[in-house]
Amino acid sequence: MMFSFAAISQEVASPCMVYMKAKQNTELLQQPELFLSKRSLARRARQAITVSNSDLPIEAHRLQTVSHVVSKIGNSSRWLNAVYVTATPTEILDLLDLSFVESVQPVAGGMAATRIVELPLNYGYSIDQVAQINLDQGPHRSGFLGEDKLIAVLDAGFVGANTVTISDDLDVSGTRNFVEGGQNVYQGSSHGFSVLSTMAASMDGTYIGTAPSASYLLIKTEDELSETPEEMINWIAGAEYADSIGVDIINSSLGYSEFDDPLDNYTIADLDGRTSIISLGAIAAARTGILVVTSAGNAGGG
Picture 1 (cartoon, rainbow, N blue to C red):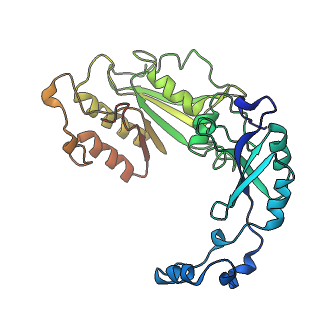
Picture 2 (tube, helix red, strand yellow):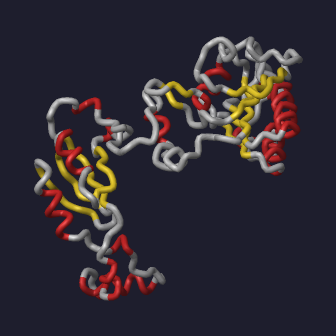
Picture 3 (cartoon, helix red, strand yellow):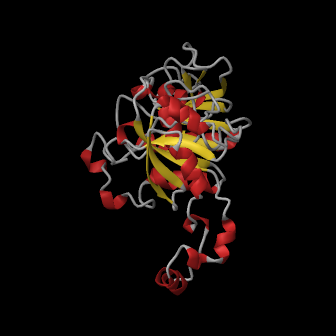
């Protein structure tokens, strides 16, 4: 499908960069003096930098072809292998039909998340966050959607995860509660469900998560009614349980630096990866081969 700018649904020309496919004039690499000065070549030589494809000029016929399509063409960049244009939505579609065009992307900052490229899935509302980490043009385009991966989500509760449908194929392989004990994690908080949905959701045209084909282990380690050091031990216990089950990834949107009792607080100096006990637990988990993904903290103090 195509994902176009919401801001230019009318035929209004907007600033864009037209990115080209690989340059075909690589024979010029044997004659760099044709497009770089002696001084420029000498600077590279002093630093043992070889002339590369990014130094090659964009082929003139490509720029000429683009100029015949768009409302206005500006300067080009050999480093970016792209040229600046102003183009209407119809012109953008025509550009994408050119054999040498890789993609057309907006220049305006407020539109940067909505790239005009062919998307592998109908993401709906999740396109911005998926594109921000390049999943749409990287793993998802290659077919990597989490299949055969087991992901443990450590959080404060998963209220709604067992009653609200976010995917017809949601695979929750198990649950464990390290706060109240037992298996019931569908209590306390819905925060874990929110985190889960960013990965596991699969609703075509509405919301596609980052790993909709993965299996999930839901583990409650955070007590939403308090903030105590014990919750860090809960987290370590949860991580060890996840390891024993055989998870590939731990996703934890939790962080601990300030507690109900200020005497328990960590200082900035303590957040060195060696002092905080939960950091030691995360390092131990990583050493078992688990990819540990954790949030930086909403306020930067996690």
